Image 1 (cartoon, rainbow, N blue to C red):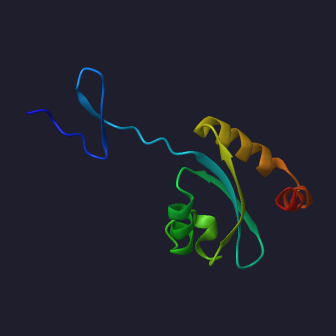
Image 2: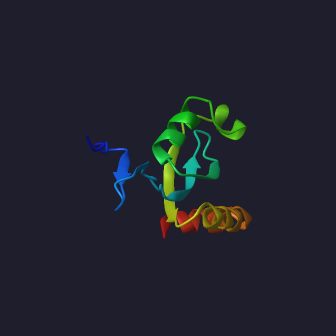
Length: 103
């Protein structure tokens, strides 16, 4: 009897089942903390990461500054691209960061 592929598996032409690779997009995100400061980071699961920040289980910077809200996020094709964008964002002045959140 042939194997039935589950929702987490896919079958190739030869009938071999293999786990499907769910590709998640990488996000550069900016949070606004309760004290008005900004925090920038990357993740491939934005909802989970926001919950971690608000639970005090994420970056040390946000632990005493919660609750935090997402001001903006940008999708990137790879982790490398998101890391490079994060570096560029962090080098901006505060005024330039605020302006990029509006645009």
